[in-house]
Image (cartoon, rainbow, N blue to C red; front, side, top):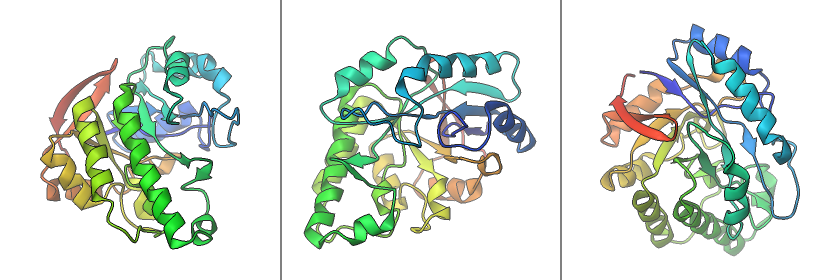
Length: 265
């Protein structure tokens, strides 16, 4: 079974409608297509241009569900939710009225600093400030995992996007985050978008994937597509990386329930 669950439509920062994404997914041989547009409940009240207005979540859910009936490929209702430490109760309350197939927990913003927006923001930091952003990121991932709200973690080492790496050993923070992911029973996606970005590497690295495998953290492959042709982008590379890290299965979702299927690519 080939799935691609992390994808964005015109509901957030994608260029394709749900119907257009579905049509291309069928042409690409995808068995299950997930729609997971951005939903950002910023504690400062800001709605970034790349996210739907959080008040439109009910409309979004209804639109995806309208397209699900008889859809080929099978359509799954997801959401990529931004995590803000200390704001979990409000996020949970916003999500509670809706029944999803899966929820992606992601960290993009670090105390107001957007980790994946522009390279120059990283370049303007001192080495100490840069290390601090990386440390904050992994602590936020740990906090997100402990919330119990999500089904899998989005683009686990996103902070490498612009080739800005820490200059100090953060293994303690990374281990704590991965342990929290394992304890919470979350899966981790191998997000293929990074191979087309400045870091030229999937998220996460093979070493991080091995560390996930050592903890029996399940995995799945997602394209993080914002345009329909990218729905299976770099899946061959992703299959090779998963096997290199010791995976022979991936997970699929329906109604927040997870099951394993053989890795098919």
